[in-house]
Length: 266
Image (tube, rainbow, N blue to C red; front, side, top):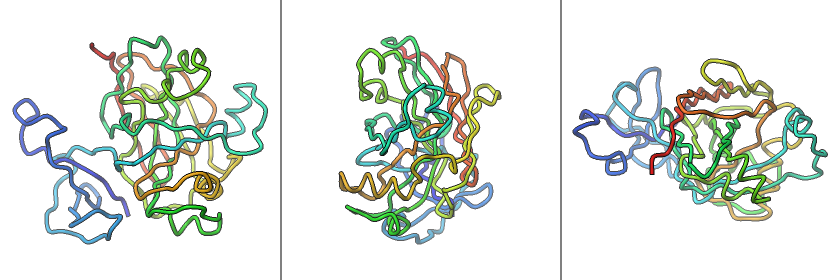
């Protein structure tokens, strides 16, 4: 199943309320339409009666997580391009939930940074509250998977010597376009295109730590709540974004997350 969060575009954007004031709905994506759900899919998946063409809705970030956990240095190719030693265990860092945006939203380049990079990734969506989950139990707590762009102010990451600020500017966590609940995440292709040019192309089978082990490792440190996201790491080929760019992260079996790059106006 494909589960999405969306707003109904019943009025022209120029006359309608700001996006933050529109009501958000959950829905089941079926072809070129979306069927409303009666409640949060983390409670139960019960179809409603209203159906809309996808062209009549705006897809939001697929979840509102209590936290966004991310894994660094998890693909062999990316580790080699950085010249880093292979880690013996996953490297965990956090992105601010306020950085999340959805499909077709704008990534804003902050004036504080001169180098902002894309990082296409497969992301895990947690389905229920859990702690200390073993690898062989991980499927029981995973609701599904989505595409994610771990946007990073690379120069600030190097300057700060840690990841928090560089990874957490507003708009630095695009995710979507929806959640795929039926996916074997252990061997899917992850690609990133910038302006139609292929920049990243790898397979989750080359990960050092597979998604199920990542859930075990992260949940040993912290309680995971329904809707939390774990980004599983980026392949080789990361690079800069510039104003006017269109960046597309595609996860095989999930779909393509498209975002547009603009300078932040302050």
